Length: 329
Image (cartoon, helix red, strand yellow):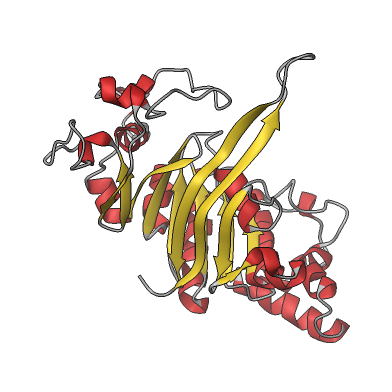
C-alpha cells in the first residue's frame, strides 16, 4: 500500500443513552477502538449490518462528530486541529439518498456551485465555468443547470451529488451507501463513473455499503465491521476467496443470486441483532457464531495479522487454545 493519506488510530465514539423515563444513561460504543489506513488512490470498502457503526465512523471522518478517543489523520495531520473549511477541501461526502441530500428549492447550478461560494473560490463567471465542466465530467449536459432535483431521475440526482463533492477537487471521498437508493441498472452506471473518476483524479474512497457485490466490484480492500469493531480486514480478492471470520462468511452467504430457485439465502445469523448498549461478553459475535466455544464467551479475541489487514477470531490466534491453522470458513 502507498503512504497513507487517511489514518484512524484507536478511534472510539461513545454515546450516553437513556433507557426509559427514569433509567440512568448507559454507554453505547458506536465505534470501538478502530484503526484503519487508506493509501492514496485506494478504495476501502466498509461493510456490516445496519447499526454496526459505519455511518458514525463516516461522520467522524467528515468532522461532523468528535471521537471520544483516538485520532484521525489526513496526510499525517490530525483533523481535530484543522480548520473546518480546510478539512472540507480535502474530504467530501456522497450520501445515500440523492433526493434528500439535495436542496429541492435550489437549481442544479446553485447546488453544485455552493462549495465554491462557501470557500470564496473565483468569481461568478469562473464558478459557472467550473460547474459546467464538473457536470460534463459526471455525464450531465449543460441543459440541467436551471432544473431542480425533483425534475431529475435518481441516477441524475446522484451524479449531481457526485459533482458537488468533486468540484473542490478533494483528496478523499466518503461514499455512504451511494447506490442503495438506485435501481440496479443505474447502480452499475454510478459505480463505473466512480471508478473512472478515481482513475482520472487519483481519488481515495471510503466506500460504505451493506451490498457485498457492489463492494467486490469497486473496492481494493475490505473492512468488516461488527458492533463497532473491525473484525476482519483484507485485500478484496483474499477476503472474498478465503474469509477468515465467521461473520464475514455469513455476510457473503447473504448475497442474493440471480437464480430464483435458490430462494432467500440463510445466513445462519438468526433474526436478533445484539443490543449495543449491553453487548455480549467476550467475543461479541459468539451468540451467533456456529464455531463458538467457552473461550469465546469469556475472552475477547485480539487482532491477528493477515494479508492486507487482520482478523479478530480465536480460531486464527496462534496463542489461543482454539487455534486451528488450516481453518477456513
